[in-house]
Image 1: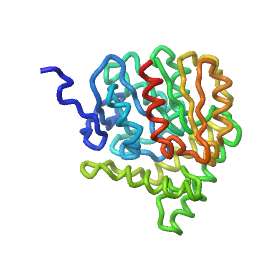
Image 2: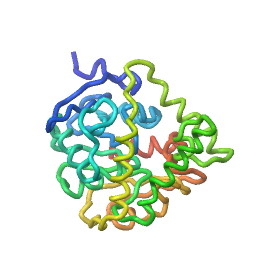
Image 3: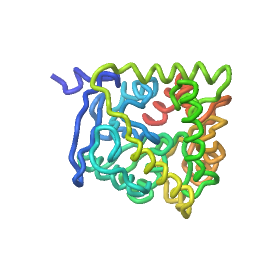
Image 4: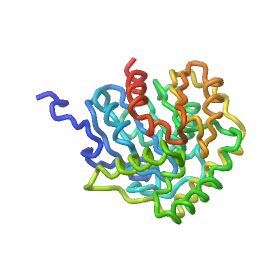
Length: 284
């Protein structure tokens, strides 16, 4: 029997697994047909294994081996959340190499995109292709204001009994509101063996790391020579959309997609367009 005969291609059905690396037990899920080079997903601020949109991850997993994981100190992974993006990148490297991979593709969103950049700059030989969505470069304009926007939208969401992601990821207009609700509902498709939510202290530490990243000395992104797909909405309030243009200018071998009338979660609002584009990019 072929190892891929009973392959799982629905993220909601992916079993929970763990691997030990550097004194940390990392929780992860994998799906899709096994292959030489997996696509490793780097999640957003406060994100756990339960925060990946199945309309993005499932289409990619139809043809590629996909791995998603909890960062150190988040969800079901042990340890304490690092206070810098660079340390988070070191953790990601430890996780990937503990699984035995010497070459991966990376799909990243938001904070995950910052971690991905730091990882590629430090370990360029590890990464074949890179997807950066809803993210920005180290030292990017207004990157250090993410915490202020985040706290404000958490208050707004609490007052309206909504999920903060509805405010943080989407425009509050006639197209954004229904897209936000649909996205949040999709995250509930997995009904068993769900992940633990991030703890408040861990969340605050991640925000401090992002602020430090935003105020840091810019990296030399000309070092990133891998094929790179950059995507965002045209009205990202968390990580300003202009920073996607900045990444595109500084990463020479990159492509840029900006979706209209959408915010930080533009790729989720336009999943029907973005997922095929991501699949095409990752399979070329």
